[in-house]
Amino acid sequence: MRCSNCYNGELHEERRHKSAEKDGRIAVVTDVPVTVCPSCETVWYDENVAIALDEMLTEMLEHDTMAVRPFSTQTSSAA
Ligand SMILES: [Zn+2]
Image (cartoon, rainbow, N blue to C red; front, side):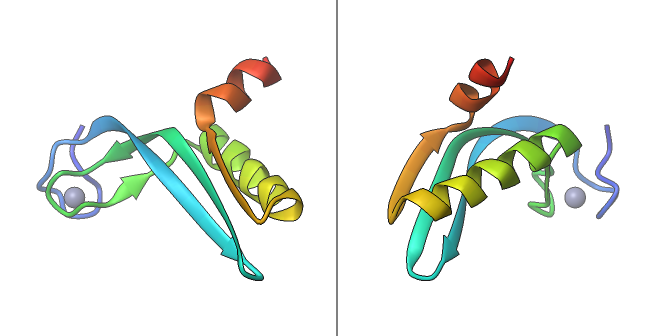
């Protein structure tokens, strides 16, 4: 599949981490499945992944000063 941003790169799937900060707190979710363009470095999140990731980061920022969690743990426990 071609990149819809630069029309140059061939998209491929990768695992990346995603971090968020709020009020001096930091949350990191590792091993997030994403689609990446090697040409322009644009990163796409699947809609379901984006929603789950957002919920995870929000919850983590509410409870911990610093938290790191793998994304796969969240998906397997939710199912
Ligand atoms: Zn691209």
